[in-house]
Length: 201
Image (cartoon, rainbow, N blue to C red; front, side, top):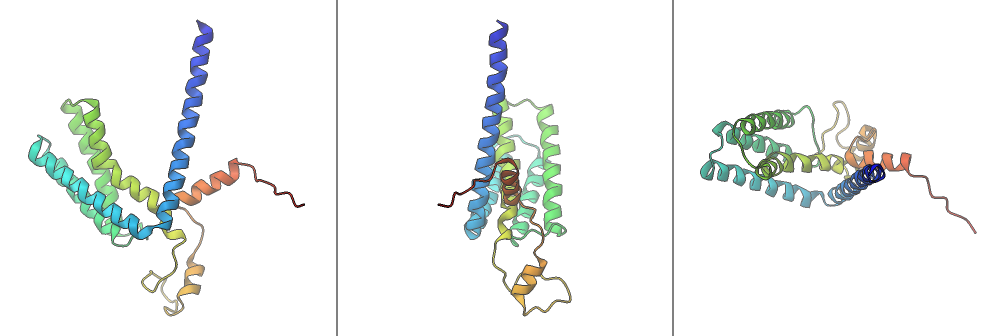
């Protein structure tokens, strides 16, 4: 009996490791796709915002959800749409970005408050959180590394006092350490996996 108990804990640990590695590989692949196809990603995010807004309107018309939850969700989608206007660049101090983060927190608070007072099956609660609260922010999170390898353009924001005609040198001077999801996964890969040594014959 005790041997089977130990085996079950070992199997559970292996399953957690495999699931974690699978999620990391999936995030790495998604970040690579987002970096490669930024215009298509922006269109997909825009359609996700429209779809989430349609779900909120459907919940308002067909279900008995709180009006405050629906309004806060729609205002959060407006903030996400305004963040999308500068995609793939994210200005953390901009009002749309701050508003999207604030509305994300408010929407989570209202959802926890609502579902703690009115009982719904777990699958319904999970579907609400997945489609209405997590889908668009998670896509923006995966897209954080999209602007790391984008070529410079004239519309890109530059620090004050720099010559606006010298786009390329300003771009490379302003380019510092990368903080996106893809660079985090690449640094984790470099630190955890050993380098392959190629033999020269």
